[in-house]
Structures are given as structure tokens and as C-alpha cells.
Length: 129
Image (cartoon, rainbow, N blue to C red; front, side):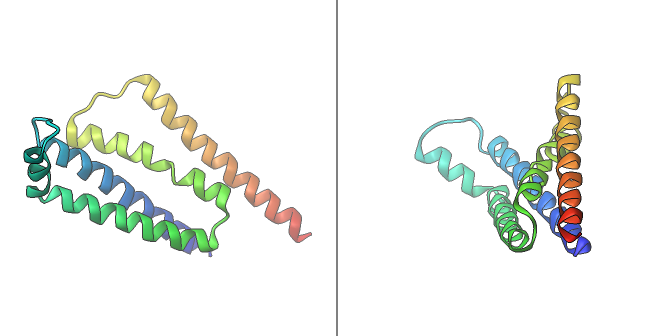
């Protein structure tokens, strides 16, 4: 079961990160930002828009499969790891600058997920005895 969770959450992270990155690439490709039909047409002329759909569809399906078996609390917390992965992909792909506050926030997200996982594990052990 642990292998199922690991593979599932890695897939979820991949699809979420891929979707977010594709979303930004779509926005950059459709510049300049205008609220009109020409701008909407520019969005769908770029293949990144279709990668957005693929990424979010993959994330949705993966999330639904995970929710069938995973405890909701830790699963919901772990799904927020995509904030951290998107931040690191943004450094590599978009040359974005990350501040110490961003790194501290990422660390707090990771620590929160670890603590929730440990608490869930402890709860599971105590219910078995």
C-alpha cells in the first residue's frame, strides 16, 4: 500500500507541476494580455494550452484514485507539495528568483506534511492495539 501512495503522490506532483508550468507558458505565449476574443484565440493557438488541460486532467484522475484509499488529511496536505515543486521548476524554467521567505515557506509546508504523516501513522498504530 505504501508503494501505491508513493507512486500516486509522485504522479500527482508531476501532473500538478506540469499543469502549473504549462499554464504560465500558455500565458506568456499569448501575450499581450487583453480581454477580448483575439487574446482567447491566441491562447488556444499555442500547444501549451492543451498541455494545461492534460496536466489538470491527469492531476484530477490521480487525485480521485488516491482519495479512494488514502486518508484524507495527510493526502490533502501532501497535495500541497506542488507549491514547492512549482517553485523549484520556476527557478529552472523561468529563471525566477526565490527569496529566503519562499524557502522558509517551502520548508514549513514540507514539515507540516511530515508531521501529519507521522500523526496518521501513530493513530493507525494505536488503533491496531
